[in-house]
Length: 134
Image (cartoon, rainbow, N blue to C red; front, top):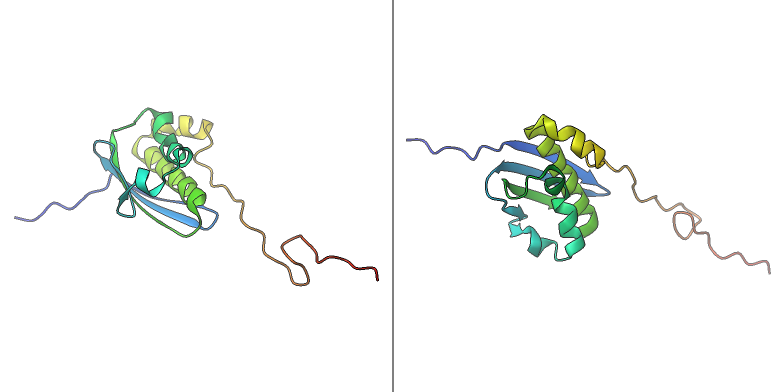
């Protein structure tokens, strides 16, 4: 008798700044696990928890899918937004009817904004060193 593999309904990826989120969504009862911990433990701020759940609330599918996510890189806000994009893509993959709802909420678009690199001869990306006339 062979063991049944853990079949994921959707397997997607989301990126934001330097954060990468890999997501496995299966039918379940709404358990969201991020790097082996509960998402409420991983994202203690209520605003970040709201960002993570935004795709589920927009499609009215709260508590219908279990999520296992691997996050790495970036900071907490970048990771939360990367997870949001990955979940939105997963829900779109699961049910095509969610596409128009998610697109209207602008959740299927990857945010291209990145940190501008520091230039030589300057203190930061755009900040110059203080100019001294004398």
